[in-house]
Image (cartoon, rainbow, N blue to C red):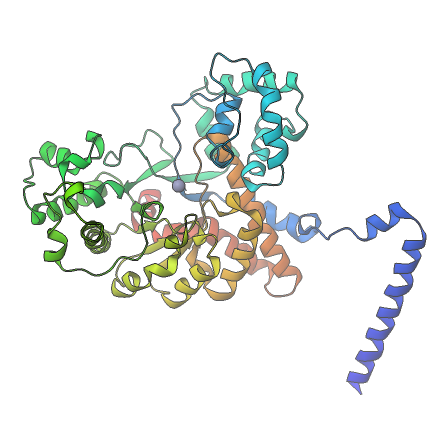
Amino acid sequence: MLDFVRIYVLLLIAHLVGIFGLASFSNGQAEQSETSSVVDTKSTPTFKRIRTHLDSIRAIDTHDHLEFDKVPGLYTLWRESYFGTFIPQLAPKTEHVPVATWWPKVQRSFANGRTMSFYRYQLPAFKDLYGVDFNKLTLEQAEELDRAIIAKYRDPNWIRHVVTERANIQMLVIDYDYTPFDYVCPYEFGCAVVRLNPLFRGFHREEYDNDAESPYSYAERMGLPLKSFDDYCNVLDHILERAASRGAVGLKSTMAYHRTLRYDQVTRDHAAEAFGKQRNELTPAQIKAFEDFIFWRLCELSAKHDLPFQVHTGVAMERSNPLHLENVIAANPQTTFILFHGGFPWIGETGMIAMRFQKNVWIDSNWLPTVSYTVAKRAYHEWLDVVPSNRIMWGTDTLHAEGLYGAAVFTRQCLAEVLAERIDRGEVSEEDAKRIGRQILRENALEAFPRLRRRIDN
Ligand SMILES: [Zn+2]
């Protein structure tokens, strides 16, 4: 009986929808486009409430590369964004070229990039920090914006203002690309990770042009012997121990840009074959064996020194698929692995790994909304299906304050859409959604990084 009533009601609703659908069609073109418009989650009252809540959270940003000493103008701001990296035809401009000469040449790139997340994530910075709609900028406004950006960077307080007050970020985990063993952060809102990449090629001292990233120079400075493979392994331990004592909160590897994420378990003797030899004396298999051993060694040291291991996954070719890490994660249950960028485009695979290794794997969505807002939204939905809400983090992964601001706004918006949709579908209460938002934007980072938590607590 109840079923019958339900079917009758559904038929009645279908009939009414049909009538109104036809009525609006007969009312003409304007009316039709209004009724056929896509429902935008961002226009719902639920989204607005959740967004307000997420904006109020003092966030912990688990990954950025801010190089604050650079003074950007408008061109630099785009060049040092991912738009500049992935649009190789972006017209260049030197300091001496006036904006008026550059601006017409770059219009085609901007027009072609209009829908790209790499373009769109910077728009909130122009709108909120400089009060302009970049999509509609005239040449005169572009010249004015260029001057405004340069002026902002003369203010020593600008970066702190944008990060802590505008983006509402309490602490950034910063990856200094160029000074991998120097952990002194000039900003009270920043802490460092140890950049591991240079350590994977320590089989010979000639591998290093730059003293700052040479473990051989480090060993000399510290008075440590470095003549054997055993010595080398001890130097790695020393680097991490010293880093931890000087305030580093984690480790970071981006080796997936250069090689496969499949790190086989090799014997110490096998790895040691490469030590003391130049690259041209080694086979690719010997180099891989050395790198593989070092990765496993670093996993042990990560656990030993309480420094979670941030691993770049995805956003390179098939070799960067996070599934390649399965063996090493399974064999190192004491190591906290943080899978970067949600493994884009392998977001499902990343969710699968975090689902299987719930004790020691975390997903870090940093950069993902900036790479693809659409995929990020799908990813948050998928991950919230398969992993507990305390396993997902976020970060901006940008080079300057404006990019950081844009990425933070983009992420909060994306997450607010996901949570609002789940509330409106009746899948989660508003109270729970707010708590989950706070976990992703703040609490989970404090749980994953014990040294960061201690720093915030003190
Ligand atoms: Zn990065």
